[in-house]
Image (cartoon, rainbow, N blue to C red; front, side):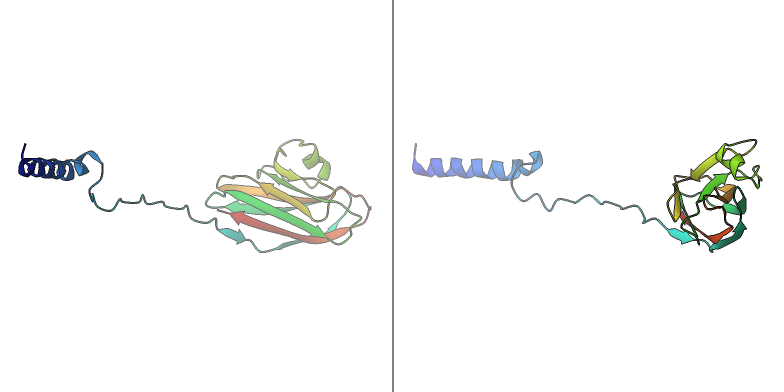
Length: 162
């Protein structure tokens, strides 16, 4: 075979590869690949409600605060702080059907006072973090378990995370 025919055959093979490879995903300048678009979820929005105050809580007493969530919340963070480190204040969240003024009704979930959430540690401040809550009305109670048997006062901070 002449060298001219060999060169022509090699050129035809090279041309066939150049035309055919991009079509099957291989070599040959098929353009820039398109990167997938990744959409990040929006950052949570934290809304701190106006601070509530309580005062004059005696042993076994509670003070009730009304809470309306609209729209629903991804989580709820409640923090109660008070004057005397020797006392113990707890937090309870219930439906609006619970209207007691008695700490033990909440602690023992008597009557219509089923707890949706409660923080009953002996640490100061008392903290309660709850998961998702549907839109609606709730009662939030702070109560004195009466460790030091003195009247207590303090604040309740509520943060809604959406």
